[in-house]
Image (tube, rainbow over all chains, first blue to last red; front, side, top):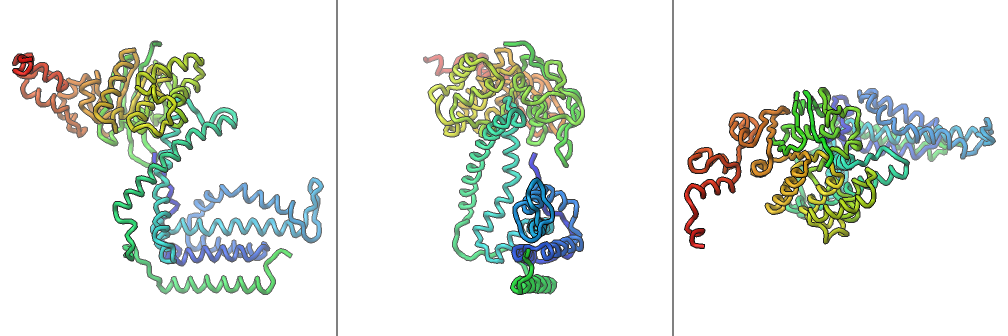
Length: 262
Length: 281
C-alpha cells in the first residue's frame, strides 16, 4: 500500500560519517565544475573522480545504476543531437547528409558527462544522507526555517500522496475505468480523471496541515532551538579544504583559457 | 435484476510487500442476496479481503470465484459490472464536474444505452436525495452528500454484488441511517450486499450475517445473535456486542432476545404494558 520513497541506504563509510553540510557543499562544487567546462577531457575526469568517491565510499552501485536508468533517453539524445547540431572543426563523417564535426562529437561527449556528473552527485548525497540530516544541513547553511520545514514536509508527504493516488486509481478501476487501455487520447483523459481528485485531496491535506502546524505555534517569531545539532569535525574540515581546492583549481584552469571545446 | 451474485473465497493468502501476511488462509462463501457485515479491528484484514472480491488485490495463494468463475484472469475494470466497490473516502472516487455526470460515468464506461443511463441517473438522484443538486460541482457538496454520491456512482452500474467500505463513517446519525436504509433497499432488490464496518449497532440493525476477522483470519461467522454470543471470539477480535444486546442477555426475562434498542424496548413494553404516558394519550 504505502510505498517507500527513501533513497537513503544505510552504511558506515566515510561518506556516511561526513557532516551533511560538507556533502551539500560537495554537490554544489560538482555543479560548479560541471558548468565551468564543456570539454569531455575535463568533464570526464570529474566523472571519474565522482565514481572513485562512490566506490571508495561503498555506495551500493546497483542502486546508483537503477536510478541512472531513467537518464538513458536524455544521455542518448545528448550523444546523438549535439553532434548533429553543433558544428566546429574538421568534418569527420556525414550522416544522412548532415556533416558530423570533431567539435560536435567532443561537445556531445562533454554534455553527456555534464549530465551524468550533475545527476550522480546529488544521488550520492541522498543515498548516504538521511532526510532529517539533509534538511538540518540546508538550515545551517542559511535556508530559512520555514523553507526547510516545507522541504521536510514534502518529503514526508510523498508516500501519503502516492497512497491517495493508488486508492483513486483503484476506485476508478472498480467503476470500469482502465487508464492503461484505449487510444492515447482516451488514456490522457483517463489520467485527467485521476489527477482531479488527487490535486483536490492534496490541497485538502495541505489546508489541514496548515491549521495543524499553526495550532502548534508554527509562526512564532522567536529564535528556535534545534534537537539535531551539527558540528564540523577534523575530517569535515579536511574534506571542505579538498573541495575548496578543487573549485579553485577548476576556476583557475578555466580562467587560463582551458576546458572548452575548441 | 439479473441472477447471480455469489462470492466464493477458497483458502486465500495475501501479503503486502515486505510485511507479514494480511490474510492467512481465508475461506468464505457468500450466497446471492445475502447482507453480510465484515467486522474486525483496523488491520484485521477485512478491507484486504474485500479488495479480493473484484481483483483489486490478487491472492498469493488460493482462489476467488464470482458466480462460480475464477477471477484470476479477469481485470478489475472487467468485473466492474458485476462487483461494485465503494471506497471508504468519497474524495478518492469522485472527479466529474457535475453530480449527474459523476453518476453517469460508470454506465457510460460500460457502454450502457443512453436512455438507460438517463433513467438510472434520475432514479439514483432521487434515492440519494441529490436531485436538486444534479448540476452542482461534486466537491462543493457536504461530506455526507459526497459519500452518498460516491455510493450512487457505484450503484449506477447496477452490480449484483455491492461492497461498501465504512458506509457510515463521517456521517451523522441521520445520514448513516439513510445510507443503511439505501443498502437495505438494494439488498431487498436481490443484490448481495457486503459492508465493512466498526459500528456494532449498524451490524445489529441491518446485517443478516456477520463475519468477524482478526489477525488475517475469520474467527466467527453466522447470524448476528449467534456471533454476538461468542464472547471469546469477539474479545479476541477486540470487539463487543452492542450494548442493548449485552444488557438484554442479563435479563432475558425482561427483554427476550433482542438485537437492537428498539427491539429491547418493544419486548419490555409488551411485558410491562403501556407506559402511563402512552396510556394517557
